[in-house]
Length: 181
Image (cartoon, rainbow, N blue to C red):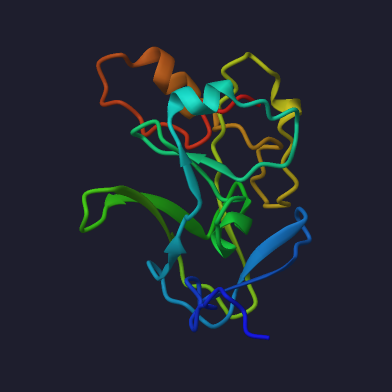
């Protein structure tokens, strides 16, 4: 019997393989050697408005939420791809970059910061903010980087900069700053 759904013939993330991570659960790994600034894929999934996110109850469940600067949140668990498995590291080898596509929609793309070897795990710095005043220990980091902060929260100097320098250009908001956890 034929499937009624057409299967994609190519991956939307051909340079990413998902597999067990030594840092946390599943991770994203490079399928081949990649140079710095190599495009890894778009963060895909269902989009929610700020108001829709506020009405949801997450109850400490595993989430793949990424909030954009326009306050839309992408839920990678619903229609997402391998980019949702990029784990946090305090010294990341990748970054998330916002840009507008041809249709004028704000999208989030992932790219390498440095050259990576095939098989390397790919990481971004989550730079979380705890709007509810939660301690850093609530967001432990297990990246093992030599300069690990011990938390997935934004570095203290970034947090202090936000509070102390009101005349400075606004810092790019954390993709997770409006999340309920």
